[in-house]
Image (cartoon, rainbow, N blue to C red; front, side, top):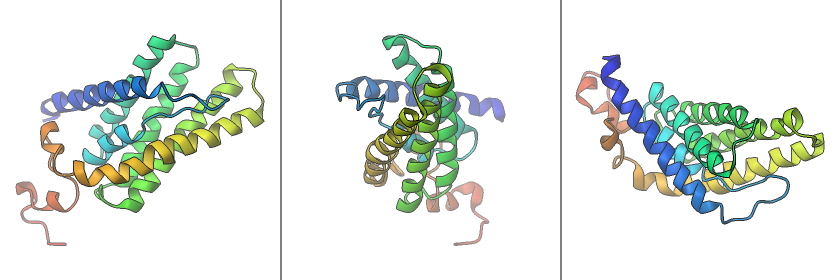
Length: 196
């Protein structure tokens, strides 16, 4: 059964990676705010982790986001701190998927998940200033705060809350999953579940 799910996980990873990479490439036209505060479309991997079931599919989507960023970094020139940032992506989006749980249309959960993913990933970005660069703690804190806002709120929570009603119950079947939440309880495998 586990092997049967492997193609689904690969599809999730590749789709998330490609879409995130393309969006990152397009959004590069928006100038950065010094120091290293940028505009990454977090709503894309967040939508993936909101739509797929919690567990391995969540981690597959998070890996896809990390892979998309890796591809973008390869175009710009890979640096020694990039693997460290990749861990931040996987952790941030995995946590977000678990926060959303089976309530992908809950605006509160979407908002909290987006903000926490932005904060977590920004911690890893800011830490690279201290570990691999020569920047001060003040610069690292400025980077953390700025990226928490641009990634978590502006490019995360706001567009995510707006697009989720349009994506929910339309995208999941193409990835081989039933919609999360109320529709899942009506699926054949849960026919004996008590009504909510």
